[in-house]
Image 1: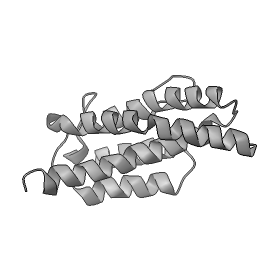
Image 2: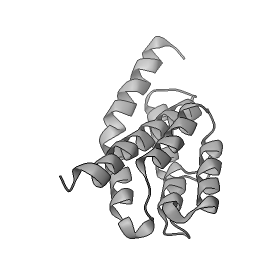
Image 3: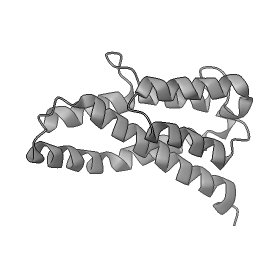
Length: 140
């Protein structure tokens, strides 16, 4: 990726940040979709995202957590499934995948997956911050 393409990609990601924040906050605002999810559990998901280049590995970890406990919710309307759906699948869409494709196209980049993983990391990072607010800051 040339420097010019990298700069276009970074600009596209920065311009998408508001949308990422809106999507994850809307998911977390649907409190009936999940249980007593703790900030540390959400941060574990963020750490997984930070240590892999695989969106599928992130979704796999999240589904593993759902199997262990109900804090992420259960079923198609759960927080976990909302996040998995937002992440998407290569070739099958999903908000974050489609946004990555759009940014790649506008920047003349063939590195959709690199953009996609960066969007996922930011989306989850904003989620961790917002969950902290919901748990500790909103009632203060």
